[in-house]
Image (cartoon, rainbow, N blue to C red; front, side, top):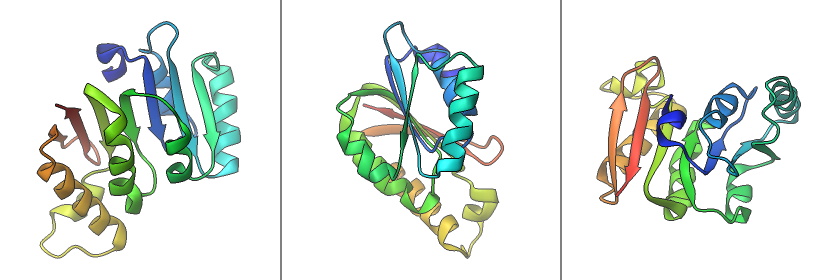
Amino acid sequence: MLSLLVQPRQVLEIGTFLGYSAICLAAGIQEGGYLHTIELREEEARAAEENFRRARALDKIILHRGKALDIIPTLDHVWDMVFIDADKTNYQAYYRTIIPRVRKGGLIIADNVLFHGEVLQKEIRGKNAQAIQDFNEYVRLDQSVESLLLPIRDGLMLIRKK
């Protein structure tokens, strides 16, 4: 739905897994646009590729294999939309890497920002929950964006670049 509303030309997805969200995001891409998705694990990348083929979305989706923090700087695009759903300990690093190349008015979507409700606890245990809490606070303090945390399932943060 968000991709259909925004109608982006260039989309970046960090964390492909089996490709479901990439297929959904690709549905709203403008003619001539592309979704670049990055998956670390080869087994998931192969499964995602097969799912892209079955969904007839291979013409809009470019799958990159490897570490996102190594791949992102090699992609020479200004992003209309970014979806972050990868290893939680690197959310803040992903955000800092992509934010300079998100267009004004562009949308960043971060998944799992409630991390099973753990970020709402007085004492946060576990490195993933702490990393997500640190990310949420970093975005909250970033004056270059507006953000909205939606308490849907495991939490979704919508971040709009000013």
